Amino acid sequence: MRPLALRTKLTLFYSITVSVLLVGLALIYYRVLTVGIDRDLTQDILDRTSGLRGYLRFEEGQPIFVYDMNDPDEVTFINRAARYYQLYDIRTGGLLRESDELQGSQVRFSREDVQHYAETQPTFTDVHTDQDQIRFRNEVVTSGRESYLLLVGASVKPIKETLDSFLEGLAWVIPSGVLLAAVASWFMAGKALEPVAALGKAAGEIAVSSLDRRLPVRGTNDELDQLAMQFNQTLERLEKAVDEMKQFTASISHELRTPLAILRGEAEIALMQTSSAEQFRRVLASQLEEFEKLTRMINQLLTLARAESGEVEILKEPVNISAMVQTIIEDLEPVAASKNLTLSSDCHPGVTVNGDGAWIERIVLNLVGNAIKFTQPGGHVNVSVSEDAHNATLDVHDNGIGIAPEALPHIFERFYRTDPSRSNRADGVGLGLSLVKWAVNQHDGSIEVDSTPGKGSHFRVKFPTRIINPN
Ligand code: ADP
Image (cartoon, rainbow, N blue to C red; front, side, top):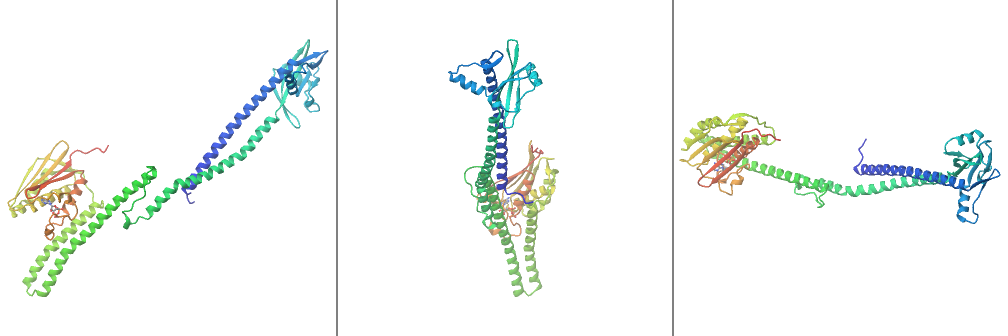
């Protein structure tokens, strides 16, 4: 079954709630009304009985009501109170007198009934006649040695009629109320959902080519505004990511085009001009450098792509970074010597980091490699490893060419190189530091750089040595 639309659901929910409320309230009110009216009737019968008993006299055994005919209050009371009454002789059970209203009715009590009433406490009894239902109260009245049973009553019919017309009214009011609530809630749900529809429409119009568009924020700061703002933040991140991707693709194309153009140019010239095997060998040797650079770049790109897509798993195991740095320094000694550089290290022994050995080695190699690369002959590179209560710190100092302040914020970007004139050199494509930064982040570490052009650079990497409890 197709799920109901939100508007229909809201309307149904409101209508059902209003129906339950209306019916509940009506039932409570009906009950209160019934009890109240019933209590009033009972009280009225009590008043009539005690009143009539007060006016009742017996003359020569015959009951009569003695009251002041000239007193309009007494006359009105007697007319009302004596509308339904009967007086029985308890001894014989015979009916002595009754009101005109009851004459000819089937309201007759047998001798046993009369004697039963006379013996019990005063009580109320409902008697049904053809047209009516009358509630009586029984009282024993004595005169001399004789006892009589006085039954005084009132019609229950008006109460029933009142309650019936109340129920009839409800039969109209409740469905009308529910209908009105349904219409109102349909309208209100429509109004409330209008901004949602507008958001949906605006979101639907956003494509990859128009990621700079944003959802409208109405400024009410309600849930929908929050949703729109959250969505806009997501859009902003997406836009940034897509921009980065575009830039990345453009950079790759650019980086590939230059060496390919060189290779192609060299090949064309060689084909046209070169005749001896020796000349071909020289061209091929020069091309090898470009091939090497291309291979290195593609390898780095692949690593970066795999790393950023989350394919790379970073191990968490103890890595003795002091020992690792010592080994790397020994390995790079010949490279530094070939450039006439001195390479020294100052490692606190046994500093251990919880991480991935291969990636930490890549970090150290990249930083030390760069320091050697960007330091002139006669210069000096120093690598040190130290430790405090919270971190293991790797410092790479060089007194090389340094980095201009305006270039510093960009050196961790992909393909960024401070000196474009070096872009054709086989020794760097500007991807090393972006990989370093990624790997440092994966180890929950931090990297910072401090550099002065012409004086040298200092890269500092910090790895947390304690396993930080996320809670
Ligand atoms: P590359 O492959 O060019 O070395 P990196 O990402 O490793 O790329 O470095 C980016 C740029 O940062 C380098 O091209 C260089 O301009 C600058 N850089 C990095 N390390 C140093 C350093 N120790 N001294 C001077 N400049 C540096």
